[in-house]
Length: 176
Length: 223
Image (cartoon, rainbow over all chains, first blue to last red; front, top):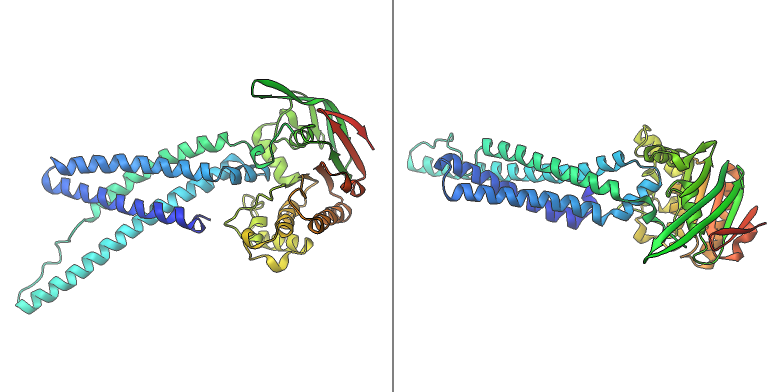
């Protein structure tokens, strides 16, 4: 279902991808620079944007689909069933963002490594492949854990909003 | 099988108190086809809402299959709706990103049934409403009548005891209206499902075993 909400899904997935990369890169810089200055500022800004985006996505999913949620309640879905559905939306989008980041990093490392190795071979020297470019795995894993905790907060917000959706809004106006 | 006993319901709107239901008493037997009729604002939709547990009365009891649902928990009401009640909406209320068959399957997705079994039941329901050839189409690709038949298939897929329809033909042309009402009558006859239709159109009375006339929140006549 989430994939068919193409526009919304694509926009948020891309935003998560960029944000995850930004956060991971900030952590990489913090590790390299010892945690001071612009790297830390960048990291905290990324965190702020991340939590805001997570809450916004959860809010949008419930608000834009409130009539559908009400209809599902009318036909017998419980709040728990709907929570599972919305939680799945949120987690799927985030996890896909991570997969995209890892794919990009893998391909980047592979391309750079390949070209540098080729250049080294032309020069008659050797290329040290142990030095990975851009972002190493640890910052990505740490970012993943941070964003998972953001999604848990977002899911709790979504759950609260779902509880407030009354089934009768799926019907025509009451009082008639 | 459904009984409303001394049911009252009020709403506040723009500071005024509107008495939507006033001492309503109604008994609907199993297998009956009932039309609840009246002008706009008479309380017929409110009556449907409290009979189904979507809204709670301020006072009185709603006995559904021997259980007072006016005091049931939300989870219990969800279970009752999933097992025993089918809804047909005036605005169809189909999920736009799901195909016709998926919209029908949606009712059974939270159950323990396997996906293949759910799909088979959905296909059977679409066949019953003569919409099988459009099963892979999205709501935007269906006509008004087809959308309502899709909604009807969703309402019957779990073989409910009662179907509640709030102005099911309100947005349809006369031909589609006849199709939908004929289908409801057929379901009533073949599956012995109790049907309760809310409408302001007196032209549909001929389908019903019982017509309940409402005005200003009260039942004024049952014929």
